[in-house]
Image (cartoon, each protein chain N blue to C red):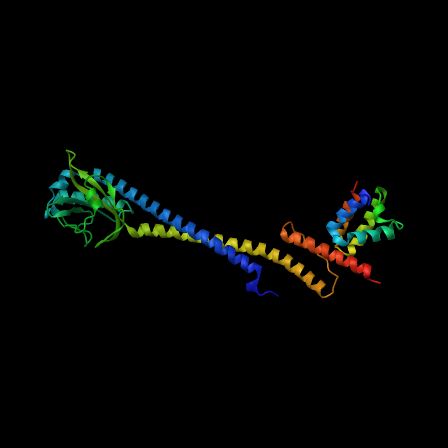
Length: 76
Length: 269
């Protein structure tokens, strides 16, 4: 797993809990051209953050979803 | 729905009100006791000061010379008028009189109200129950430690020695203050303290009630979400945000619900 993948997962778990990995794998698979989550790179972050912000609204409220997207976006 | 008497609001409010009652009760007991003592000491100091000042205005030689039957003499009338004027000039003074020691014991000499009030004492009337402080008054200015009750009512008294031209003590001047006035003052302060305590308890109960209510509101919100999930309704959003333990519980619960939703999405066709 790449460093970036680990950072994204660590942040997401704090909001979406233990199923975060499954959630993120779905996002990269469907919105980042079938990219494996473990192969996530820095250049994928803006697009991933955008889709996390949208998809997370299905499981948490809008505020938490946008906060999570913002945190992912700020990963360096 | 939890019964009101099992509610955390009720338990918290009752517990804190009891706590405040115990603390305030002990404080009131101590404060009221200390205030009563202080008030009494102040009254005693006032009496000693008053008696001392009045004693300097009385002619000790005349006091010593006055004998039963002298009530019509100019010396007696002058001294009585002088005492009466002092008594009426101060609302604090209930009775003002002079006394001296004879072979019969301690006797009245000049009563400020002689000829004015029916229950006043004449020259030579024996005071039946002299106190230690009254006897001590022949040596130094002193006030009674406790209230004394006699045929003239319940009073607190102060005494000061009256001296003649050569500096010998020939009698005492007695100043009585009505105990009612002192007790009224004590009761007033006591009532104020009780009022402050009641207001404090009321304000505390309101604050605790409000704090408990916000806690209960959030716990109920979490409970409602759990109820929905337990019946298969996953359309739940945990919106409780707090910085305390309830907030931590809400965070954990929210993560659990989110993960459940994600897993159910994966399983759905």
